[in-house]
Length: 232
Image (cartoon, one colour):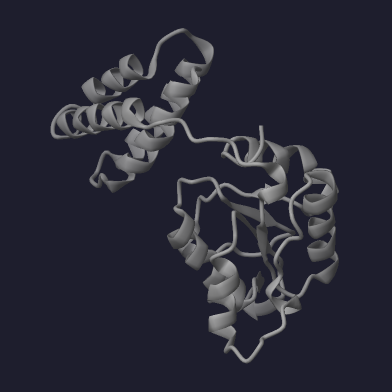
């Protein structure tokens, strides 16, 4: 698949989430088929999406084709972003109580990738600022954000089963950075350890499993950074 088609597909999948109706589940199935077609054949995204639209019929056909045309224009007019200098990248780590995972991630980002020392809010001196002021100050300095989801707060669900939740500050900061950096920027990278429950508002968010350790997920983390403008 060409880089142009990949960009269009990501935008297309995001935009089409606004559709609703009886055919939406069928639509999701067709999208999976579209991805397979793109990977296994030489068909481009335009041809595949046209086929999807034709199968769905009205009113979806018009909506989908209009979205595709809009995406086409946006992709073609967008100027390529410049690569950042690695030594200028300042990561921010959103984390809970798992100190071992935090320090392993800091070590990986600073020593393996060559980034500046990652920002961890708990290690910053308040300097007379309130906690939210301190957070906003350091959040504004972040180039890329790693959200470390660990099961720090055990609780019972509606059926009485025990589940593990991330700390409330982790959920808050996760949402803050999604709004600040953009959901489609790729600069909010989620690392999930164990069976911690994902916040419901981001169900379906792609995450990297670090249950076996941060180092074990090196290749996936590098790939996530490569897909943004962070590293080549």
